[in-house]
Every structure is written in structure tokens, then in C-alpha cells.
Amino acid sequence: MDAVIVDTNVIVIANDTDDKRADCRDRCQDRLQQIIDQHEKVVIDDGWRILGEYDDNTRPNTRKGVGDIFVKRLLQNLGNPEICTMVPITPLAGNGTDFEEFPTDIALINFDPDDRKFIAVALAHKRDNGRVPTILLAIDRGWLQFMVALANHGVSVDIICEADMQRPRQRRKGK
Image 1 (cartoon, rainbow, N blue to C red):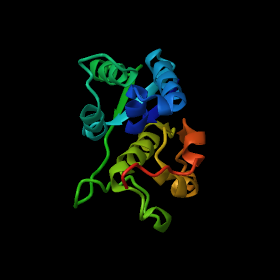
Image 2: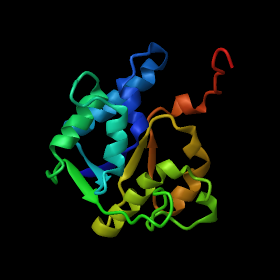
Image 3: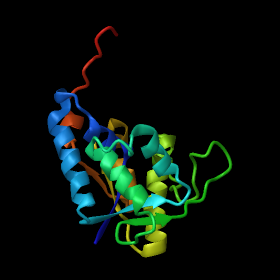
Image 4: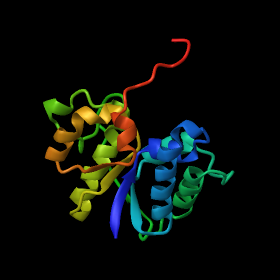
């Protein structure tokens, strides 16, 4: 069974009701449904950093969106190794976003501190289980400039909404 790490933006977009991202939303929903149907195992950290972020961005008890259902199922199955693997990551002194498992690489120095936990979990899983899970990402353009550096460390990222990430950014009204 393949293992994946789900970036929070996949869950948020899967719950989105705005039709301007309907294609991306549908792909995120399909991907989460594939996981729910037990085609892939989810990897998270044992310190609840990822689950805490999921919880902050969903309402798992309302069971309305696919993202909410995904998070609720994950919470209900934390002890089931067929569905979820929890790995320890080692925080370094500081603000709680730097981890021993995150590569010391000048090419990654500007990688978003809030997303470093996903990389640390991927590399901790490799350390503990011999395989690096794929990180699922929806549309976070901030990752694009780091893809080569991440690949150099064995981290694989599956961009679910690649076409959306390649489009020019639209300006928000009123700005």
C-alpha cells in the first residue's frame, strides 16, 4: 500500500463550494476519496502538528465536505496501521517550525516554515520505514521553486491541480 502525506490545502479545496475552482476541487475530492477507500495510507506526525492544522481548517463533526469526512475518518483511525502511520519528528529550539529531519540545504532556506513539518514527516517516515511517502499538494505555488531541491532529498510531491498552479495569478478585487 502506498503512503501519502496530505497538505492541508488539498483538504480545504476539497471542501470548497466556490465553482471558480470546481475542476481543482473535484480532483482534490477524488484524491481524498481514493485515500478514504483505503488505496493509500496517510502519514502524519505524532505531535499532532499536521492534525492540528487539519482541525483548524475543517469541521470534522459536521461531515459535510469530503475534506471534513477525510479528517474525521483519520481521527477515528489513528491507531489503525492500515489507514494511518504516525511518525515522530524532532523539533529544534525556536519557533516550533524547524525540525531535525528537515534538510540542512541552502536551497531550502526560504521554504515556508509552516510547511516544513510535511517534509520532516516524509523524511522521518523514510528513516523509520525505508520509504518516502508522496506529499499531495493542491495549489500552493510557494512550493514550486523548491521542487528540485526537495527531489534531491528524495521527497516526491504530487501536484493535484498543476494546471491551476501554472496559470497567472489573478488580482483580487479592491486591491
